[in-house]
Length: 306
Image 1 (cartoon, helix red, strand yellow):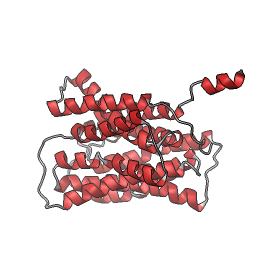
Image 2 (tube, rainbow, N blue to C red; image 1 turned 180 degrees about the horizontal axis):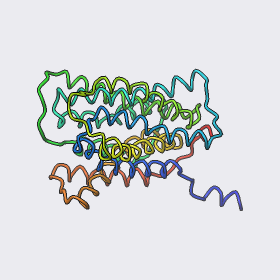
Image 3 (cartoon, rainbow, N blue to C red; image 1 turned 60 degrees about the horizontal axis):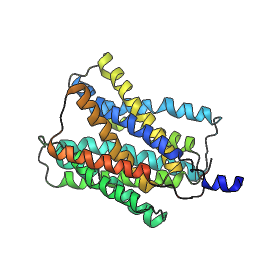
Image 4 (cartoon, rainbow, N blue to C red; image 1 turned 120 degrees about the vertical axis):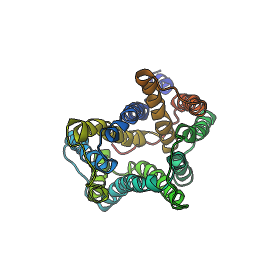
């Protein structure tokens, strides 16, 4: 009797809670992130602040785990690979936006879940039902539509296109390695090495900064940036746990499609910004995709390393 009840009981889905927290945090971060540049704090210094805001959640999760930082070559390589892929993509994005049109760059980058899905399907043999498959397809269709922001872009040949593809590849591979690492490395160690990877590139961001321009060093400069970027940092931590318990081919499109929904809702609520027809269509598709991915029935899987 008890075995029957246990078999019929719904499976716990911790990945979903972590993924939804990531969606909310990144959605709010997306709505607030333009404030830093608007207040005279350059993006390269925002990167440095972001790298520093990774430290508090990294120290917290290490403390929760009893300071058991794994030092095996596998843990170090996986963690630094994840951190450097994400941070390196961000570094490259700064330069790409100076030579290419943002309204082409961002739609290309937004397709990074395609890389994650293909790698997870082929190498990890992840599978999903028709509902999850439809959600993935709709999310991939919606993502470029959500990121289409028409504006001025400087000419720079096709260099920006190649760099955009490299960023897409880096972030897609990063998500795949995040899932792969979670099968054998503790989540707190993964995030700690991710933080180290982000900090290692901070000097590059400082070198890229034009200190001849006026830089806001007041409360609305680095301190405002820190308050905003800590949302990104905590979201990155919850994303590690989402990949730990969930399928990469579901978590990646859900987090990438869900966050813009929160950003758009906040923009409409507080700024009265109404999206154009193309973005509105993308938001509707993203909403449908998110619901399909959230409601996808859980299939039995081996439990990851605790």
